[in-house]
Length: 338
Ligand code: 1BN
Ligand code: ZN
Image (cartoon, rainbow, N blue to C red; front, side, top):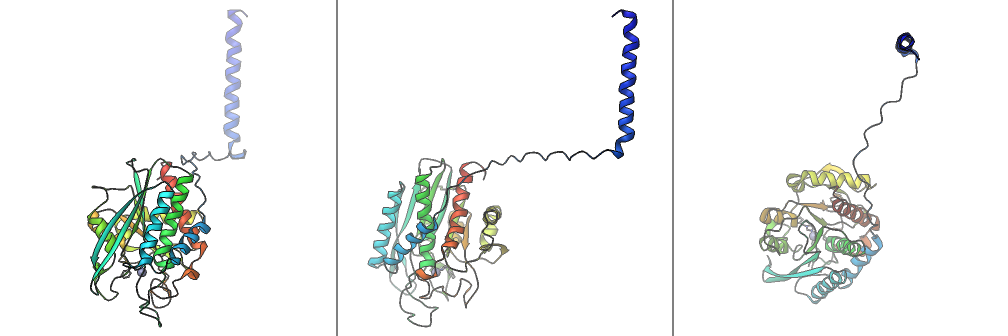
C-alpha cells in the first residue's frame, strides 16, 4: 500500500469506530443490563475441623460418675483424679498436678488437685479451656436426701467429659498451637447463701499460683453445666464485660454450625464461677459457657444441686453442640482464622 492511500483508509476506520460507539450509546437503554460485578472473593479460608464424638464425651462422663460423687477428701475423688491424669497422659499431654488445700466454709480443710493438661507445652501461642472436676457434697436443692452427695453428671463431669474428648481429638489430629485443658478442683462446695469466695477454691488458688508465671493464653473458655437436656447457653455477663469479641465469635460460630437451639444470642447477668477468679486474680479474660435455662426454681435448671443431676440428665446433642463448637474454634485458631 502506498503512502497516499493509507490516510483515507484510516479515516474510514476511525469514522466506523465512532459510529459504532455512538450507536451503542444511543441503544444503551434498550440493551439487557449487564450482570452486576462479581463480589470480591472473601478471603476466608474454609477450615475443616474433625468431628467431635459426643458418644465418646458421654462415656467420659459416665466413667467419672461411676467413681461415685467426686467430693473432696473421699476415695472416689482421689480415684477419679488419678484416672483423669492417666487419660490426659494417654492422649500425649504433659500433666501438672497442682495440689490445693483450702478452708471449707462449714469447717475443716478441703484437699484437692488442679489438673493442668498441656498439649505441646513448648509452643508459646496457647489457648485455654477449663472445667471443674469435683462435685457437690450435698443435694441442698432437692426435696429428699439433701445430706447426700450428688453425682454431678452435668455439674462438673460434663465439662471434663468434653475436655477429654478434645484431648483425644488433638492427639488424632495435631495442631501447631498449644492447648491447655485445665480441670479445676474444689469448685462446687460453696455456701449458696454466703460469700462467692466460698466457691471455686481450686481456681482461686490456681489464679494466684499460675502453673507458668505470666501465663497469658490467646483466649480462655470455661465450660460448666454443658451436658444436660434442655441446656440453653446465653451470653453471660462477666464474660461479655471482659471478652465481648470472643463471646460474639463463639455464639456466631455455634449458630453457623447449626446449634442455635442451644446457643442463644441473648445477654444474661454475671455468674459466680471459676472464670470470675481467673479474671480477678490472674487478669486472664476467661469467658463462661454455662447453661442458664431458668427452669425449676434455679437459673441453672431444675436438676441443679439435686439427685436428678445423674447420667440420665445428659443429652448427647448438647455435648455435640458444645464440643463441636469448641473443636471448630480450636482448628480455626490453628488455621489463623481467629
Ligand atoms: C456453678 C455450678 N456454680 C456451682 N455449680 C457456681 C455458683 C456459685 C453458682 C455460686 C451459684 C452461686
Ligand atoms: Zn454446682
